[in-house]
Image (spheres, rainbow, N blue to C red):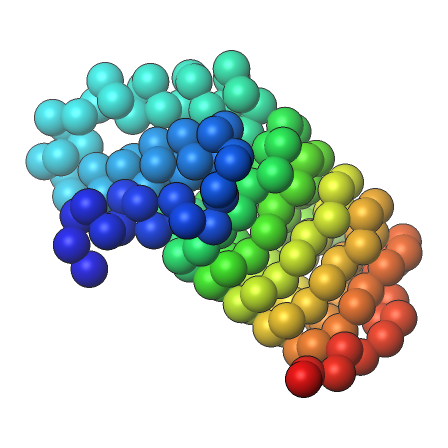
Length: 170
């Protein structure tokens, strides 16, 4: 994928969403810079700007080391926190106040971060914590707390999240 295509891979998915486009463009640029030590040194001021502007001003924590597939959509974005170890598939939707991260265990160690499949729609105020795997084509309802795996083609709601229904693929 060429540089231009990489930087704008989320552009089409975020039509009429200026904030989402801006954040994802800045995020993809930070990812490119993060690929080599030389570019990190040369573009250090940009990385500081990215962290300050996106995290402090806009309230969106998307570390440059995060693995996120193309077509990512961010709606409203405020209070969005994603751990750098998380993996997000293609064409996923993240809404405001979503937290995706690892969990601290009783012995002081941490679990792995969540792995989210393709075409996952995550509602507002959702917490996905721990070493969980979210399948493809999943909808997670607003306010859900996901602490266990969710299979493909499911709808999950509640605290703790439970599978409400299996979606039928047409």
